[in-house]
Length: 283
Image (tube, rainbow, N blue to C red; front, side, top):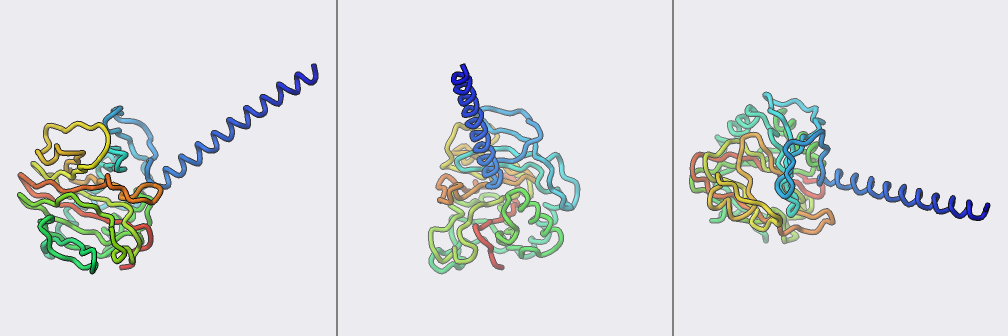
């Protein structure tokens, strides 16, 4: 009888040990996902939709001051391939107007980066106008950049300066990658790992951000333009911020992050882009 009791006790001990190991592994995986920005910390659910976008209220960890009042902040998961999320009410109306007013007197025709020289050059694929705001330029921009770092878990020092863009009717940006395929442009900060696109204005029609290579089941909303219906699309809304990752968690490039800006049909589109690198980006 004693031997049989010892045998049962040994089985119970091994079962308990296996459960503890599985719980420990699950905890490690969850911590890794949080650290990579794949998951956010929800405090509740708003209209969770299976097979469609998932809406999560975001835990308010942001202690930085904002210029003006922001509405309710929550994160919407729109895709896993690419990893893409919309942070609603990331900026206040006053912050959006501030960035537009600061940039407006200095706008120039937008360019693209030459993969051989690293210098800017004109291109027909990008017809907007834009300008850069130096990282840490003033208190308002420092607050926004800190908020970006809190949201993405990427240090402020890894980001380029904010680029403010203006699209008028008919202007667009053809689908492209934000990551580089050459060594020259990765000398400063390494590869671009993620992009945060902040919408500074509403757009009456058109101007969607589109991911033509996105994978998954998604349906085109009726209010989207014809361009916006050709893939996974995000409609510009003042104050919202779109975060998408150009690299997989294993540090390989993600071709599903191909994205573009649909032509503006009615109204004007103002936005601000923050590109973030694997390492420190020196400015």
